[in-house]
Amino acid sequence: MNTRAMLGGWAALTLWLCAGCASTVENYGLHDHFSGSEAVAGATSTPGQCANTANAVWVEGASFHECIRYFPSSDFKGGRVDRAIVFMEGDVLVGRGESSPNYEKWTPQRELDAAELEQRRSGTAYLTLARPGVDGSSGDQKRRRTHYETLVMNAALDAIKARYRIREFGLVGQSGGGGLVAALIAERRDVICAVSSSGVTSVVFRARAAGRTTDFTGTPFRDVWDPIDQLPRVKPMAGFRMFVTSDETDTDVDFGSQNDYVQAALKAGLPIRQIMVHGAGSRHHQTYRIGNRVVEDCMLGVSSDRIVRTYSGMENLYNHMTVLAAHERAFAEGRSNDDALVGGAAGGGVDGTPDRDATIAR
Image (tube, rainbow, N blue to C red; front, top):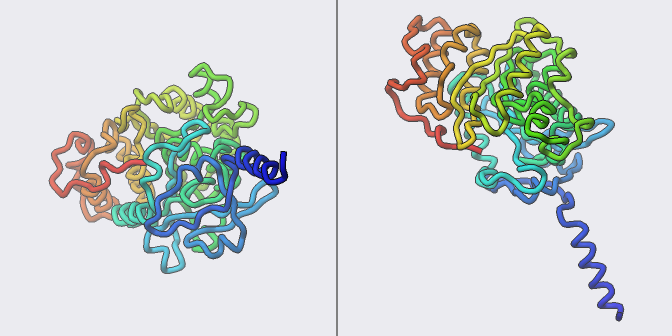
């Protein structure tokens, strides 16, 4: 074989071996669509690159060094935020090998718009915190539901807290993000409200119920960082409350695994309430719009009984969340004592412009 042919063969072999290898994370512009292939392969960054990325924090520890992006509402521009709601998206990868179909439809601008909408509804500063390996964050989403992901996200919250001098958080997450909420409350003492929407909170239980011998990610059970196992470590701040939004017919994260966590949390003495709702999508899995309303009402100080009564039986695609949010905010602030919407919102009958986010999903 001549030298040129040999070099060509080595080049082809290198390309084959590196298919799916991590590369430098893309610095997405406002209207750039997120890359599914980057989410599958994972991505790396450096402190210098991270410093030149909008709305990003560099975090490092003994087992990680990542650049984590976040998408804040406009009130963060003032440089100081006393209280903030942090939302974490669901899993982007289907198993380990491909990204979910809707992921590439999203851009940083859409994330910012979503944060701004939630802030306007509740009046509380709001941001979406991108998980490792997706939405412009460096890292590897194939390592989700391991200690690595919890450590990275906890460090990112610390960095954001220091940057904006945040005193307390409300955490909310959908699916895999809901599992992170349950994992993070064992690490932190500054979370006043926590909401897991259809969350992967009892990882091993879920996988075993499906007849699996590893997590759905392929991670062996011994390497899973299971939120239910962290319950003995949860030592919340005074006034802490937790809610779980669930659909009994959820065929993605089954209700049994969600309920397993709730019952264990109750046994551990945590102030947790489960709200039965109607999830969106063919798997009845999306409950994040309700989860956002619940955490926002919790941050406003609405009683747990009222929150459960208001959102029980609600459709995630309920089309007047903005009207309902204004109603509950007025009640919390003492500007109204009208209970007309409580317990009746799920059935409709509310006047107002339909919400533009009701048909948008990841």
